[in-house]
Amino acid sequence: MSQLTYSLSFPHPASHYVEVEMLLENISSKDYSGFIELKMPVWTPGSYLVREYAKNVEGFGAWGEASDPLTWRKTNKNTWQIELAPFPKTLKIAYKVYSFEISVRNNFVDESHALIVGANTFMYLEGHQNQKAFLEINLPSQWKNIETALPRLSAHRFEIPDFDTLIDSPLELGNAPSIDFEVGGIPHRHVLYGLEDSGLDSEQFIKDTQAIVQAAQAVFGENPCKNYLFVTHFLKESREGLEHKDCTILHFPRVDFGKPEGYKDFLSLAAHEYFHVWNIKRLRPEPLGPFDYSQENYTTLLWQVEGFTSYFEKLILYKSTIIDEGAYLETLSKKINYTENQPGMAVQSLAEASWDAWIKAYRPNENSPNATISYYAKGAVIALLLDAFIIRHSQAQNNLNTVMQKMYQHYYKELDRPFTEAELKAVLEETAQSSLDSFFEAYIYQTKAIEYAEFLEPLGLILQRKESEETKAEIGITLQENKITFVKRSSVAERDGLNVGDTFLAINEIVPNDFAEFLENIKPSESLNCLVNRNGLVKEITLNADKIKEEEWILSKLEMLSPAQKSNQDKFLRR
View 1 (cartoon, rainbow, N blue to C red):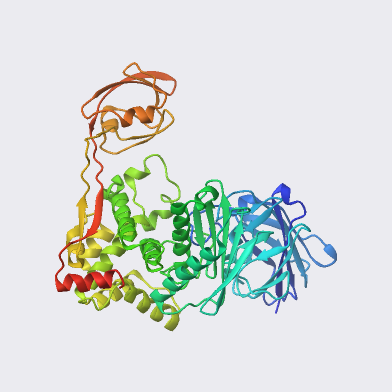
View 2: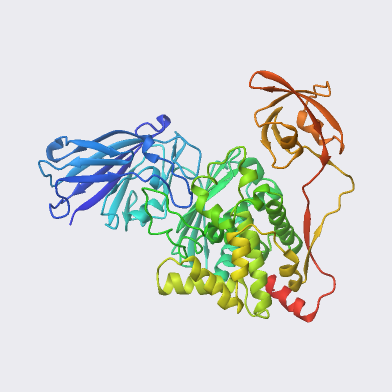
């Protein structure tokens, strides 16, 4: 059987390239006849956008024995076909990948470190994705550490069980400090790039992370990891994360991490990605694994994998005592407010938002808030409603934790296969002991307004509108300096003719230092004579301001509870 070894080198890290070699030995004509096809993934799991990673490839070449060059050609945007004539027993392929994008989904290489994302780096042999392979890493002399979840055979050599595992095991290379700790006998590691001289309280940091891990695994009853790796890049602004089976890559603003609320926000991000250990990396919907790396992998269930995870991340912080009960209810209020004040709430269903993530969620434009919703935020609201529905209809015997445990045990541990939407609905109904037909029709497939009281009052909770002390006006635009970047649907701005791209020159013959601040202080029904630059022409537009349309809602506990409400609330708060 042939053996494949990948090798990575960084001759000049400051040039932002990683050099890749693939050595295929003991080639048999039974396995390869006439030619070999190599493909570069076009996307990476967890980020639903075709990113065209092949665009970063340069200098592709192939050689047989005695370094004889072989003929090759590209057959499409991400496929290289190598002719095996004369037939070689050993084949070497080499190429370079330009790597200079700050993102958890893309490679980044400079003189200080490298983040290597599998989909952005490694090609696969078509038809041989399940073949075991090896990885060797040649570090620059100034780098000492190789951080990855891949099984380590020696200091610089790793085993690759299959191509999916390679794609799911990013590499952090350099000299970033690390902190090791255990939870239930399972080794964990924090790798912290860019946090030098931060005054980090390591003891509290590890204590908080341990609590997060324990609270997450308590939902499912076990932890399937043999070890786990957190890699965090502390940067100027970026805040994002990407889940992997046994690790995560996190980006977080360096300055925010040093502030109390920023620190909690970081722990929330870490809790979200850690919950994915179970929800999506092992318990997963069709067709999210095994993956087709050559095209989009569509599903209507991103609201479950990301929305449920967004819901549980806050519950995990609460159960870890990182936030208290009041702060927990406040986080749920924020999810509800964000969802309800998104104009796209009345336009796009959750199922549609999941399916169209490939063309809408990761490719937003100036009209996206008017036409789309977040399957993260609304998915979390739906998780809240399902949690409440299950608790009420099961007489506080079950909650959403019960569903996650059942799904994990049956579809991952017993059957080791993805689940369908129908199967998810069936387990929810079985756990609630009640039909969810009308719920799915109204809130998953359609855009019906949510009847919150129906779900929350049985838990002894109430959602109340926050009364403002003053009446504010709304125009319905977002500005970057004095340029309009968003016009809200059904707003004064849309009605009276302002466009995205218009640049304010003056309002009521005034040129304020800050146009956004000026507009925040206008009064309802105030008339505004606006001069704007539209594509090089000056236009005069009159606006008549309206009362603010956005509403703020606060979730709180009722003062007086019936015995049933008390029991339900205890189950909801996991007391």
